[in-house]
Length: 183
Image: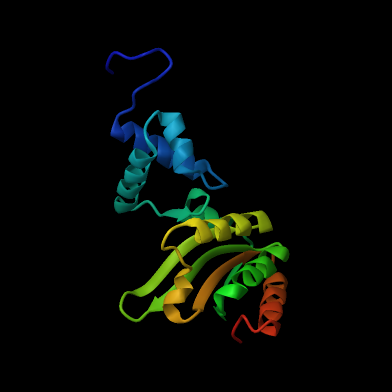
């Protein structure tokens, strides 16, 4: 260890990655790059690079809108997980997401089947109207940002996590009735 102030410990890249891996293995909620950067006294970009290296080494890290989580941790949170195929306009995005979270479910991700690139997915981890509002605000404010379903004329798939199959069935019925989910 190099000479440093008493308040800040300097971590090697291996120590940082071990710390990140250990924290993710214990996490039940997403942990942001800013969280890790603060704990390890490095920049957020260093953490993003560390996570990329951890992924390349085989760690199944998901990047959601609120931070990082291990894929096993995401799926183990829900007694029931299934997928919904949807098609809608950008104006119906908020209605779609609110409908899902209002039933107490989580929108884990969004997936499209792109003609050139094949399957493209984005982790969402939306569990409340607050989460949905933050997501929609980010989409609105970010330059050149648009939902990935805009690449496929609005057709996309959501992985939904919820308490039981009956909840999923109610969500699907509600979205079918609104003309958003496909049968």
